[in-house]
Image (cartoon, rainbow, N blue to C red; front, side, top):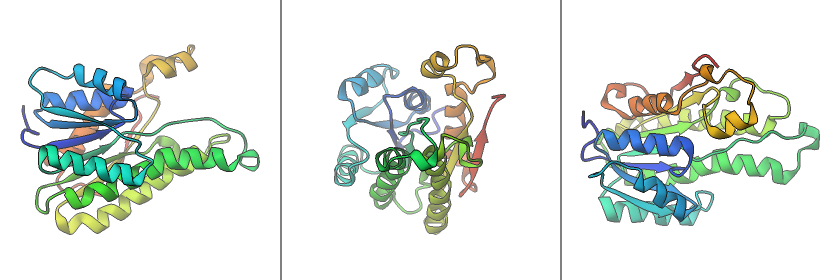
Length: 237
């Protein structure tokens, strides 16, 4: 099935575990891909993993830098003509101290990585999504967004803010035919998580390709009437 044939999909965090899985899933469905990440070498590796015949381009960009993101989106539209899907995969996780011991730098780091990155990319991409084109934006929140946890305050708050930003964007864009949704993953089955939690039951975690399937659903025509949603993807974790 080539349901994304002729559509340009921007994937941020494309050199990471979930970004690679998401890009590969879109490529297999016929999408043209703009792969975004900070590390050019890692981006090249991710591009090399795409199936033969997939039209793609890489853009090494710091998604925390608003002007750099604007320039990147301009480059994507110069290359492909428009943006149809924005998959905001870039983000990160860190445990930390208690709130009272959290420094400004620790707070700002996770707010920037998980929230400012989404804001910057949405702000730049939305004017490049044609009205009536069934545009899609899919953001990554987290299960931790709906229930705070100790030593995770900045992370929980940043991911909760992604839900609220998603809802606000959905209201602003629904009359243009652009849907905006987010997913709330449980524990993802990544090499890093396995190394950090070697004694956990990894079979209960969320496989990356399973989460990518949900992202593709939200970007597809099948989800054309879904907007402003925060979709739990917990598996058995």
